[in-house]
Amino acid sequence: MGEIFAIIFGAIFINNFVLSRFLGICPFMGVSKKVETSLGMGMAVIFVMGMASFVTWLLEYYVLVPNQLEYLRTIVFILVIASLVQFVEIVIRKASPTLYQSLGIFLPLITTNCAVLGMAILNIQLGYNLFEAVVFGVAAAVGFTLALVIMAGIRERLEFVFVPKHFQGVSIAMIIAGILSLAFGGFKGMM
Amino acid sequence: MSVMSEFSKGIIKENAVFRLMLGLCPILAVTTMAEFGLGMGIATTAVLICSNLVISLMRRIIPTKVRIPSFIIIIATFVTMVDMLLNAYLPALHAQLGIFVPLIVVNCIILGRAEAFASKAPVSHSLADGLGIGLGFTLSLTLLASVRELLAAGSIFKINLLGAAYEPFMVFGSPPGAFLALGLLMALVNMLSKKYKLE
Image 1 (spheres, chains in turn cyan, purple):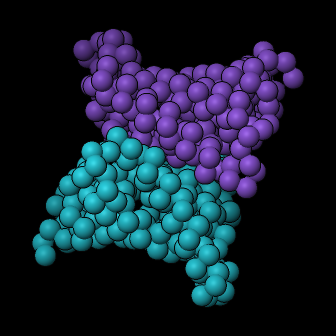
Image 2: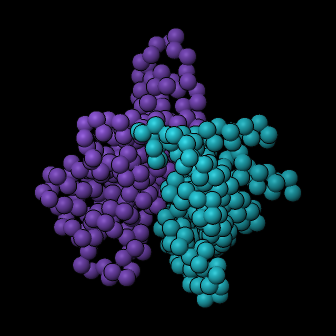
Image 3: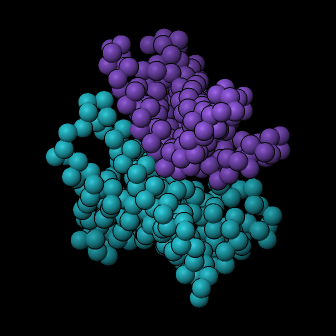
C-alpha cells in the first residue's frame, strides 16, 4: 500500500509531469487561458492516460517482449495511442453527447500530447506491474490537470494586471510556470 | 518562394521555438548543458529532414483521409532509427536525453511541418524547409542551454568562462530555472524583433 501511495504522491506533486518532467507543455501553454476549458482538457487526459497505460503495458509484456520486438516500442505505442484516442472519441460521441460536447474538442489534441506517450514509456522504464502502471498513468494525468487548472486560474487574473509589453503572452506564462515549479519543488522534502 | 528563402525563413523569421512556440517540451527538458541541447537539436533536425523528404516524395500516394496516421508512422520510423543510432554511437548522450529521444515522435514541429508544408511542396523545397526549421530549432536549444549552463555552472560546452570565484546560480540547472530562463529569453527576443522590425 505504501508503494502505491508513493507512486501517486510522487506523480502528482514531487515529479509533477508538467512542472518537473516537462511533459505536456504544449497543452499546458495552449489550453490554460480559462479554468473551465482547462478542467475539460484535464478530464479528457485523465481518461485517455488511464486507458493508454493499461493497453500499452499489456502490449509491451504480451506482444513486444515475447516476440523480441522491443525496438518497435515507439511506433507501436504512438499508433495505439492515436487509435485509442479516435476510439474514445467515437464511443463518447455515441454514448454521451453531453460529455462529447465538453470533452470532444480536446480529444484530437491528446494524440500529440507528449505526456501520454511519455507516461507509457516511463511505465516500462520504471518496471511497474500492471496495477502500478495504471495507477501511475492516472496519477500523472491528475498531476497534469492540477498544474493546468492552477495555471488557468492565475492566467485568468493576469488579464487584469499590467504586464510589460515584451513579456506579454507565452513569455510571462513561462515565468509563472517557473515560480509554480519552484513552489512544487517544496514537496521534494516530503518523501 | 525560392529554395533559399524556404531555408532561411526557419532560422529567425519562423523560428519554431521563439516565433511559433512549438517543441517546448524538449527545449525545457534537455537544456541543462549546451552539449545536450546541441545533441537534441541535431537529432530532431535529422528526423525532420528525413520525414520531410519521404512525405514530400509520397505526397501524391498518401490518401488525404489517412494522412495523419501515415505521417506519424513515417516520423516514428525515423525516430526509432535515430534512437538506435544514438544508443550505439553516443550512449552517454542517449542516456542524458532519456525518454525525450522517443518523444521526438510527438514533437509538434515535425508533424506540423509535415502537415503544413511537406505534404504540399516539391522535394527540394521540403528539404530546404526541414533544414532551415531544424537549424532554427537547434540554434534555439543551444542558445537556451548555453545560457543555463553559464548561469548554473559558469561554463559553456564545459569550457569554464567565469573562473573559479563564480558562485553558481543553481536554480538554472533545475526545472524552475528552465521555465524562467526560457520566459526571459522570449521577452528578449520579442524586444529585439520589435526593435529590428522582424515582424
